[in-house]
Length: 265
Image (cartoon, rainbow, N blue to C red; front, side):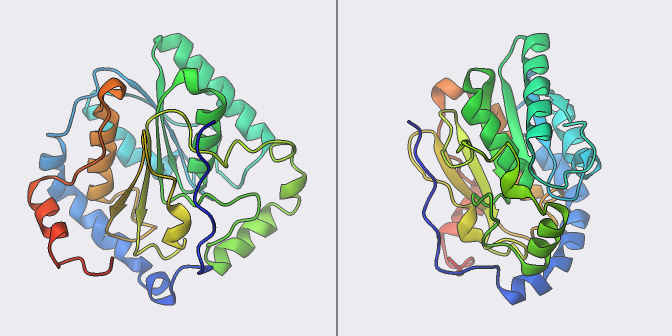
């Protein structure tokens, strides 16, 4: 059986400082156009299908730029096409199961799943239930704690509860633990210690074999436009599953990380 995620960390929510610094997302968005020439040198897609699932209270509009980027790299990219992601439900999951099956049948290739925040929860469940149709799993800023969200900003937590008052009674959660285990496919959890919405410790998956945790620098809100996130996505999606290896920062960034510039480890 695939390994289970890490146990609960000591802290509950993100730091107040990180929450107050979420405005950094604008700076990350401004950096993206300047980084694109370098990002376009990443591995090519060769028509591989990729399904992107948006985060809580967002829709396919939120993943527009990253979908365009992956398309330019040569991937066959799909949005989830279910409107706004307001929570986890059996109805949405069943629709995603049908969408995954349709993409797999139409392309004749296993599908890579990329899920942002709450969307990563759906992607993880899909990868566990339908691993023969899934090539890889990548989650971005996703906490592995449901059906009761833990490690999440109190305001977001309350909003989620307001929009999903009967969450634990939904059929998606009854008699199922699809979200608890690391799938038997190459899996990458992208997280930031500067996340102002989630406690980053809840974003850590069990490492080993084909699973890894990759840290980037930036805000939660800016993860859909963060150049480092884009590089990790391109690098991971280009990996041959048969010759999978852990992610390594490119060139100078790896040398800087190995030094003292990022001393908040």
